[in-house]
Length: 259
Ligand code: ADP
Ligand code: MG
Image (cartoon, rainbow, N blue to C red; front, side, top):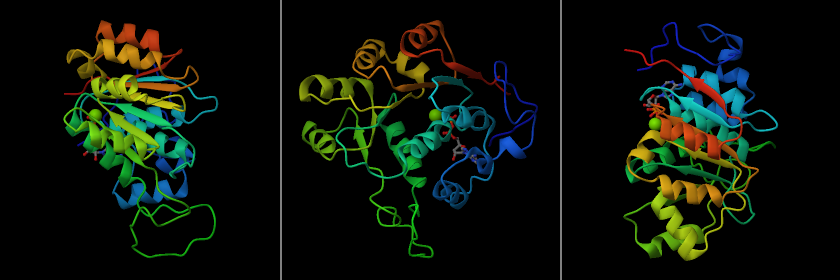
């Protein structure tokens, strides 16, 4: 459902210029972990969508760079931030305290979808060393070295006890709605001190739903050294202001709406 066409790109000095997926435009050329490439193939993702092509490589640079990604609904924004997230976190649970990534979304159903996409990238993950080649084995908690990334769902509608258990399980990635996340920070002393990678997904909806105060409060509690991404279908002024306050010299990837 993603038509390339003669895309867009207003402000991108794109690497894989023009159309097609040769060279800089393919998943294979992005320097991704072999297990991640394998998972993408297994899931049937053959070539990156335009927004993915324009964002993934620039999200993996050293030092990390902030980014604002704007593209219409259905253009593949979830993988645009989830592939770099999994790559940066190495696909494995870290036995250190605290989440390393936070994804903020406007609603519970979206949070569940996002976790599903994230987990799909960890199927059949293999560590760097020699592995038993378990053909067709897609138990993502057992294949490969170490334990798979742990995902924590922090959303309204869940009981507080469950939420407490969720954070006690030391997730690597927290997928959250802003109100509930802030509540856990304030009431349960959830620390975001080890967070390196922050995503505001469907940022326009986050603002429409009145989360702007909670978002600013959350921003204030995140380490300054984080990499921050904001994805949205539209870029109203409130969002531009928020991006100016919360992101550091972000790269702007803006794909013109099609249709
Ligand atoms: P957005 O967040 O921009 O609205 P999604 O991330 O929800 O878009 O993706 C929309 C659909 O496109 C999903 O069904 C997803 O599985 C599919 N998709 C995403 N990336 C690719 C890809 N590289 N190749 C094929 N399908 C893709
Ligand atoms: Mg989306």
